[in-house]
Image 1 (tube, rainbow, N blue to C red):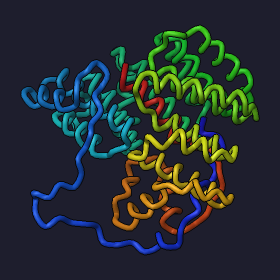
Image 2: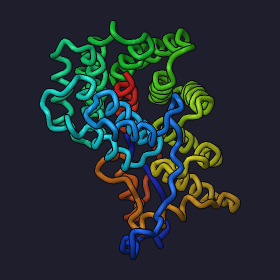
Image 3: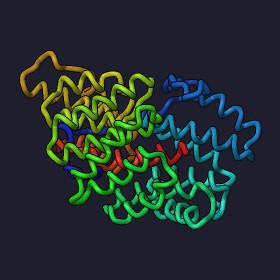
Image 4: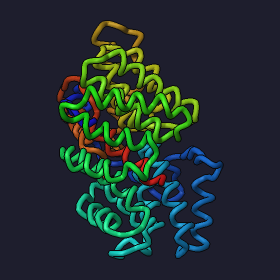
Length: 358
């Protein structure tokens, strides 16, 4: 799924070139932002999970629940503050070489999001070498890491080693993602589509990951209509579940931009302007339509991107996928770039989302 990570991005207004000093309030009573935090699946809010953990910070179940909730909200909202919440919850075990297996698996996932690959690899290897059942999920997580490192052979080995311990759809998606980087892409797509047909009741994270992998496999094979069907099916499932998957949405938006369908990108992404990666793509759609002479395409995304970059509010720092950092850097530098696929971020975040939910 990390194919064709093209240099792609935004046509920039010249007025975005000058950066201003970050805003600093005069006193602690100034409200900087009011957050509307979505409730997690199962009706628990992050505040409730935090309160439960705060009353027993040494409790592994309480810490795991709070950290998992924070990581899920980070995945949906792309707000790095949630990564800090998760690390605080895991604090008592953060530097322990051998922590409880569930803690180690979640710690590895968090370290991967923070780009601490060497430390994450150590955690994953320790779990794989142990008799703990979390070792199987560790293999799935490491497969995602190996793919992001451009090593599909090692990724496929991890996928195959975990196949008998995963659901049919997760196993098929893992194998297809690895095989799709080689000459086996047509067979990988066919096998994955068969698994999708037999997994009507699959969990949300599993289906969205499978749909995204299938869509990008189809893109690689030049099967545009098939790619569109998988993206549409994933978006429908996401909406029906009242959830948000920025990785899926960004990949879908990149596909639509490549098809020169700026209006469709606006329809898809307008509800998701809090997510920086999606705001960038929405701004690109506005610029594309404006360049084509569509005066009615003007929106707020371009202005918001300029304002964020000018005031230092852009959040795509070291904890964000490399391709997203490159997009923000090119926006700031006023560079134009062509359309392509998101790839790397999608494959990594999909694997991590699944592994952290096992």
